[in-house]
Image 1 (cartoon, one colour):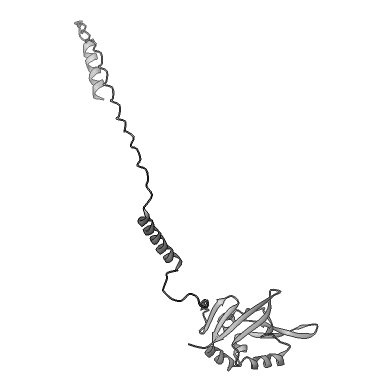
Image 2: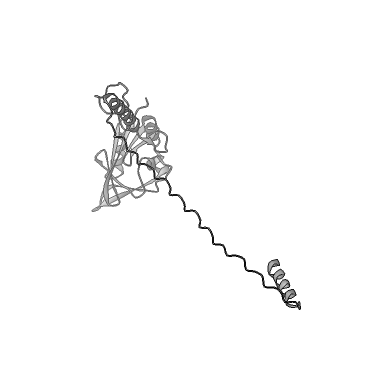
Length: 214
């Protein structure tokens, strides 16, 4: 560093001189002036809050009207001026993935009459889309077990699954192939088909409504 080096040179030069230097007069000591005290920050004067006033009748009506409109938007209860005293509208289903079939819930479906007629007139649909095997209880036929129900088949989109045991159709018992053929013939003009079955050792039911195209 330059300052210490310069000081060292000066000391060395002074010590090598034969002339004794005069002692330097000490610099007069000066007392450090105290720093001015910081001024205290001004204290904000408290502002009294104005008392809240209740809205008058006109404002209250306006607020209530705004709330009612928001409620209508949120819940879909906007008044359309129609008659609301009639029967409630039927619950709409959603497409099951098979043309002409709508799923209301996991046990209720609708099928268009056109699709039903096309299926009914094709006796080979069973063998192409699934296999059925007769079941017995006490050596007596008591239904049919479904096997290899294809996910793309009409049966799958009507809620049927492999392993289901169909015991009744429209409350008519299925006691063998002959009874199945008789029941099948009676379904030609049916408007509703109810399948009574056993699934996972529990009773279940599938309802299929046959609907006409509008």
